[in-house]
Length: 247
Image (cartoon, rainbow, N blue to C red):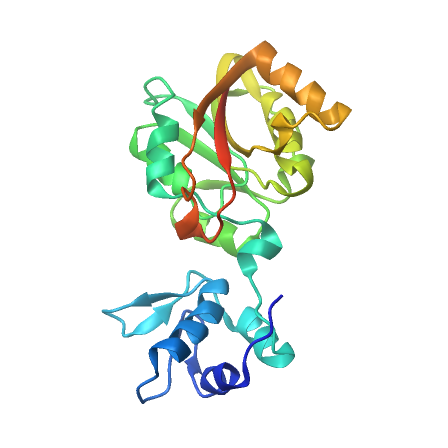
């Protein structure tokens, strides 16, 4: 975590912070100071809303910002939870690899706040979401999605299975491989799994990665390599690709 400059801490401590927004103190900030303040706000999930005249958050920012103010260090909710949500352009590209969604029953593990689930439901499919973060799960529930709150890796396989699975799992420490292998067990025969993953598994530096390469080759293939910066708006520059697997 990077250290917050004293002048930035002073601005944040003088701000008005509620359960969904932050209003900076009255007065003009220099461009450099505003940029530094905005970095801390963005790490906690806030975005400037011109209509609200405030930085608006999808969840209560006070725990994260309070910790930042107490420790003097930037706190990133996204990095702590690996919650780098899927940009709209990536969602559209990914869903293009599925047949018509209408009438399908689709699972979205690690659903975040519904980037995929919203788009899938709009196409006429039924969606079941799994989300480990209770606040993100609450957002999904408010949107009307069916939600399993908890760690997806702890979920038991549904006897009925799913027609399709669409997922953007956490990548750190090869978690993407673990999540994909677990998710594949939830597919109906002939079902399709689309997963955004990191590129680390393509480096066969361990038996686990070699086994995953063989699994992908047996059941499908890499179908898309996303351009550099595809997840920039979500707060990460990580390299990503899309695999399509069939049960």
